Length: 207
Image 1 (cartoon, rainbow, N blue to C red):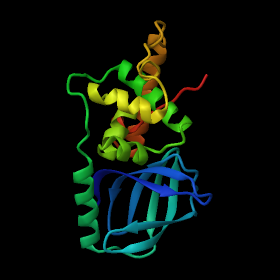
Image 2 (cartoon, helix red, strand yellow; image 1 turned 45 degrees about the vertical axis):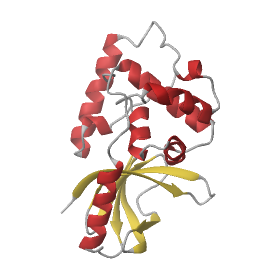
Image 3 (cartoon, rainbow, N blue to C red; image 1 turned 90 degrees about the horizontal axis):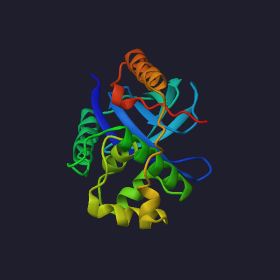
Image 4 (cartoon, one colour; image 1 turned 180 degrees about the horizontal axis):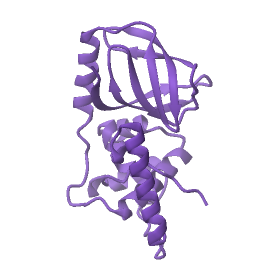
């Protein structure tokens, strides 16, 4: 049985660089993770799970940022429950309830992600310095919400930029309606094909 969750954690690449990893579901035989890391079917990764220690998992399929992994051996129900509990604790995002998610929030999220990457920080490091849950930073970057107003200045300082750089207005000429509709349709098609929610699909267009 797969346990759906949203657990944002971090990993370390072969070169020692930090990697942001989000686990979407887990079962006794494997898990589904999302990350910018470059993996292909047949690759092996080491995963540390509570009550299980380091275990090896085999990537059995890869699609963009999503990777289906199979454990070399089954994990215990206690381990699954511990992972699920950690997800529940970390999944309450710290957001400004006065905001309604919009295209402006998505632009803020993309800008935040760009500034964070430029500062050489991963989401987990931002969360630790901001004293918020990792799920909060993930929500900000995905355009689901913005940080509370009193946290913006601290976030800008951590990124090494001015508050105005973080909150700069979006260009008046946004994407054409036809392009916006195309992106939304593509997100829905990808979500259906992968069996995941539309909010877990993000399309970035680089010009």
